[in-house]
Image 1 (cartoon, one colour):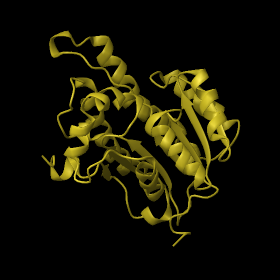
Image 2 (image 1 turned 30 degrees about the vertical axis):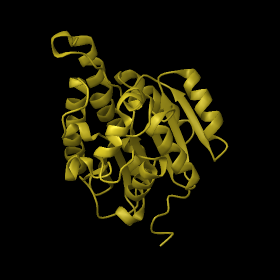
Image 3 (image 1 turned 120 degrees about the horizontal axis):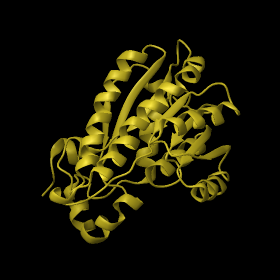
Length: 258
């Protein structure tokens, strides 16, 4: 069973891996024995995360703005300087923008869509040759897209582009799963509330209410998201593709608890 769920020795790319859910995923993969490549828009964030995560295993960090096609290409080129194969791609890099409907700016909409949707698409297609090269008949390569329960639920705050972008990620996941099989399996994870920089403000204001809404009475923890990624990245999920796995304490599937 340990081998069934093992990612030891695998090479994993985690975009947005310097903070929040991406950091939790990178940390979990390193603890499980993978070699991890992380990216973020800010160089200082990359340096800090690489220093901390490097205590757990081999990690490489690159500062790239993945909302731009050229930056996605450059990141893939930098990764290729260290390895010619990638077993796991976790597309986590994302951004949100909140504003009232009447004030919602085109610039905010474009920023969210460019990173959350186009960045996922570009990173997947540019890394495809390295994913194909890593794939084996009994263990395909993996793409895991980080979506959100906001793709299927009305968000708690007016982040109109964010929910729309994550719904697009869900559809893109299904489309890519059909396109890239059987060498590459493509799935998504839809997290609920986790204590991240993106969620901290609303958790500070409404944390008790949000925790009470879940069926398990709490927000997510690092092991919750890392465990889901490791399952989808391991041989245990060899027969799973095109799925969107909610990791949200039942919030999106059973409805709010109160």
